Amino acid sequence: MARILVVDDERSYRRYLTRHLAREGHEVRSASSGGEALEIGAERPPDLLILDWMLDDSCNLEVAEALRGVDPELKVILITGFRSERARRDAPDGTIFRIIEKPFDLGDLSSAVRDALSDRAGSEAPPRPGR
Image 1 (tube, rainbow, N blue to C red):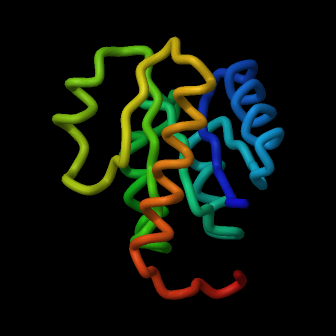
Image 2 (image 1 turned 90 degrees about the vertical axis):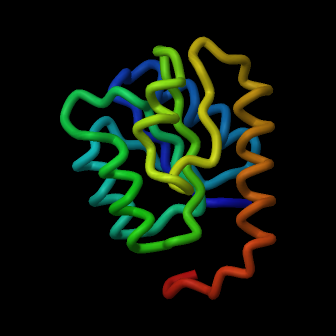
Image 3 (image 1 turned 135 degrees about the horizontal axis):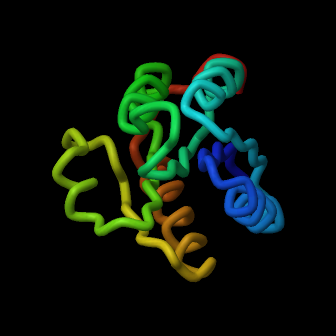
């Protein structure tokens, strides 16, 4: 399946999402901060980034853009407990694949993950080193 990086500063939520995605067969790593996400993403770039809109230590869009610098085809799903209009407005075009508002059903997350990975597979991205 895919390599997914889950970034959320809420430990219980991060673990919940990580376990769910791992049960679906994905290789999942998680980070509690933007800095940790950048370290993990540089070490082993993900195919998909699931990113909390409001991180304590950094601007999450900067995290998304930095990891897209490593892999321009990286798909980003933004999760938020706030109204998504601001996130849509603040995100540069093409940065965010989908925004999901909390609380959400895990089925909605699974569907977004499938769509993002399917879209990525159809983008004809060149292979990355270390794949």
